[in-house]
Length: 137
Image (cartoon, rainbow, N blue to C red; front, side):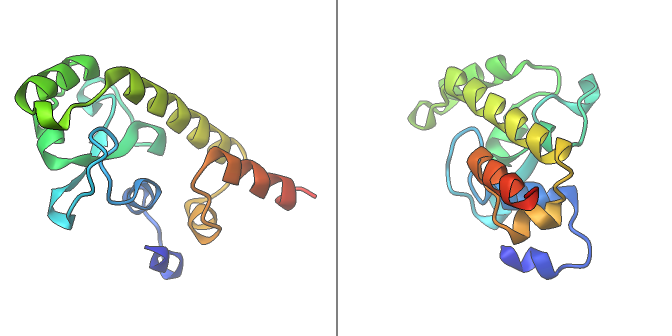
């Protein structure tokens, strides 16, 4: 997906798909193009933003099950009852969300653009920190 660096405008949607790859943030399943959806972690209907720290790649089945009025933990519990063979660990997801928040906070506070992130393959917090150290010399 590095061909995005040649794209004239990289949208937030493009960026989130690049950042998360073709893997569901919740189930960690590798997804086909038809199964990929972008999920608002905190639903727009409840005041959630469309910024990258509130967006993740999601399996279409999970995203459809996840109600805009339901808390994430409730959605995960319902998913685990319906699909126990693809269970989701809520505590693990909470940790992933903390790392996502940290990653996006560093990236935005350091004014690292989507294009810069993709062109330099900055996929982890460690990648961002190394990049910033070199950039700011």
